Image (tube, rainbow, N blue to C red; front, side):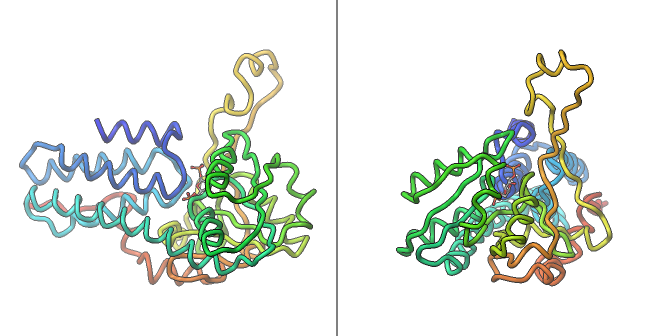
Length: 318
Ligand code: RI2
């Protein structure tokens, strides 16, 4: 079944990356809507709410996921019959997926302008949006070198070096703890984001904030590539972003952990970089200072999607 299959793949990180999980959730909602057989609108809406809750609950940190689910679910508000509701979901999901891909292209074009010939650029984790900037700069003929981190414990750096290698971009692969040793050679750091809060703090893969701190100390520019749907509307209401903590066996094999009764493995997979360490956030609508996060939430996301959000408070039609 497309719904549970997608939910399982997002949970296990077979589908990962803030943008990819958002598109996968939109597609799963669309597939689920099409598969429902009931002609009763209320039970259709109930079933869609259940699906939306299931998908939104698969990973807690990347706000792209609930934002995508809410954007697609909001299309149900005008539907008065099941066929209308199905069409609304399918159309909105398709629209969201297209605009998400388009946003990555736009970010690539804008981000590439921040890269100069001869630059040495550091990236962390595996971000489609950050990689789009590097690939676009390379495509436009700029010659630069990349440092890519390993990204323990899930090794997303291996995905990044494959993409960079395929593009023909010269890259140094380093362990996460080597960042400060090289930071004085680096001209620019580019990362992605899983969430951006109203005060411009960036939530991204664990290790990002240490890199930002090292960059700040070395006066190296730190740039984040993030689509507008990664900004977190509910942070306006004071809600904090939950940091996902994944199973300990991602860090230490169970058989070793079992033999060490005094040892507890902690595995938070994201951290928070404060706005003062971020020079620029590149969105599809332009590059902004992090202090403008509120404007993005207000003008591009609107309060209503978040309010729609958590409870999926869709009116039943009698
Ligand atoms: P794009 C990833 O999370 C990384 O933290 C990456 O920086 C971020 O999503 C954004 O990725 P994970 O799913 O959307 O690997 O730019 O935990 O591809």
